Image 1 (cartoon, rainbow, N blue to C red):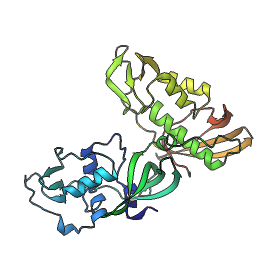
Image 2 (cartoon, one colour; image 1 turned 90 degrees about the horizontal axis):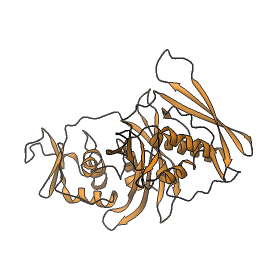
Image 3 (cartoon, rainbow, N blue to C red; image 1 turned 90 degrees about the vertical axis):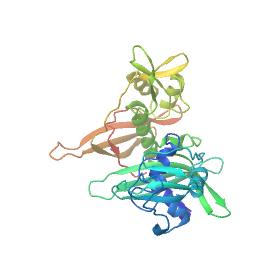
Image 4 (tube, rainbow, N blue to C red; image 1 turned 135 degrees about the horizontal axis):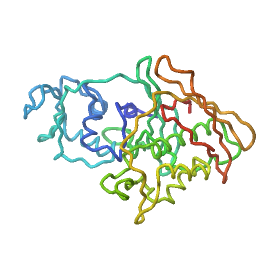
Length: 340
């Protein structure tokens, strides 16, 4: 089903369509760092010898790739649903006439293994993908990337995936479909997905992700900053979103933790300059206690040698207001390593 563009899911680094600039897109995905591969060679299969031009016109790079600008713009427009702009440039690339010159001296990183582990059909012919990645080394941990895409067909290029959304936040998939797993006859797999979504909600919106905060728009002597979570921009909307994953009591407490409140019709939360992730991996086991309660046992394995025994914490899924939600938000926010 993924066709020849399946590599698009296997990009080096996070991809968030709404947050990624054209400059970042070209630098990180058109050609992957320090190697002649990526979107460009996957679509056009051009040998390295055909597009390396050591002496670029502006003599800005010690070595560079020379790419057909129309081909690059086709990828930007059709694969990423963005508008090309040949006036942009960076320290690593620039447009010049009908070509794009991209530095070939940027260095590389660790290889990673990737696997599409889940797909869901959304509205309007779109498909949601969950991709699991792992760095190719003994100490690597699993991580997840989520995509919403549509399979399209081009008379010249053939079939390809057009990406509408991509993020390390699993909630992009949940917000794209109707809630249907609200029955008491829920499966452990479905609860595992719900746990992953609750974890992401906490990690992205409560724990301290700063991409949603506008530090130039503050109140209360800068203690609170304007905060926007996509379509969520008021306290009421934020609380309703939190109640999708946690009991109402826990949802209210979570918003208290970050001093969430409205000001002039907009949501403000506690200023957060950034926090580090815990150096551990969390694994979970879910056990049915009865028809309205499932126990979730979290085990945290720490990266550091000589540490204490693994940390074990427990919380429950309970059936409240016709939804399965957690009765506790006791997350450490390391890496979540679970089979979906």
